[in-house]
Image: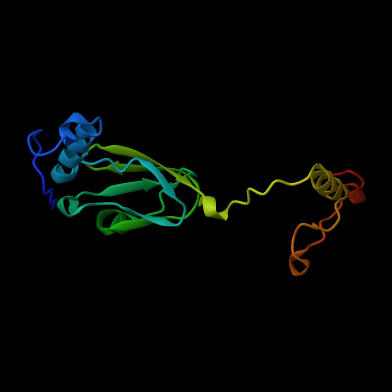
Length: 155
């Protein structure tokens, strides 16, 4: 359902004269017809609507970033949503032949975009070469990594 409380002509407003008018009409027509694409970008751990109310009988095949099919046959024919658990590209294949690709990214709020000094970066690189404890982790989460040269270089 869509409620638009203005006319679509240029007598009541100037909306048809703006560049956004044609994409608005196109997206509205796709929404109302039920043929909107599921393609695009999403955030990890979000849910994807697999079928609309008009597509209840349509089977949906989900292919995860590893190329596996995470839904069983029963789930593929009845599940309403699917949680996009990790970053990567997911493919959706519908029984009617439609094929959608969804790109999933990590939430940008989880990123740390602080600028580190050159001295700090050199110290991190030095620690990683030594195989010592990871000093950029909190004290309780540090772990000792094995030194690959301690095994005589045989791996």
